[in-house]
Length: 223
Picture 1 (tube, rainbow, N blue to C red):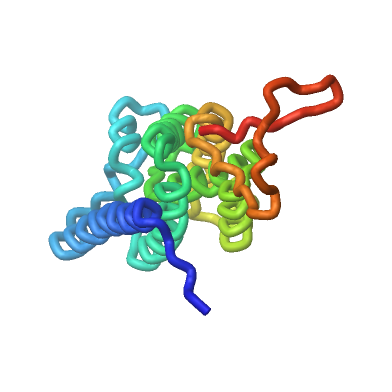
Picture 2: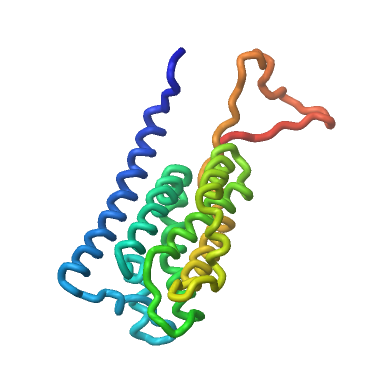
């Protein structure tokens, strides 16, 4: 009995996804180390709603965390969800991340409570909602499998988009999730579907006929 072996391009894509996500998480940890070592108090770079200076948080807030526990929690979620996104949606990933990153921050700046909002949980919520809704919309085997995985692990994020815990920016969660939902609709057709598998028992006559009768049909599984 032989083990399952991935095609070289699939394995390479998975490795690249891991490296990219690990690099981003590493940047977050370096920032937190510098913040603690030099007492920088970088929280002031978070989003502060409806104040012009607070707009800088749209760029910097996802990179800043209040403490090590906050960072560790978000790092674990980013590791899993980030790899799933980068591996499962190689063509749309950059557009999805840009929309979630900037859109969630702008939503917080426009509509959130007057307080500093920071942390990468808006990103994690956006990625989770994108992957889950994409599985519903696309309905190919890979998208459905990835949607089931992330929902099993992080389905509880649905409840954290509502006011729940003092000191937690549910607005970041909400607008991250909203951007992920929008991205799922906007980019639903950007990544190719997996081709349908042809089995040996279908024989040589499994190809499409030159002409189809009125009661015949076929599905186009081309990329």
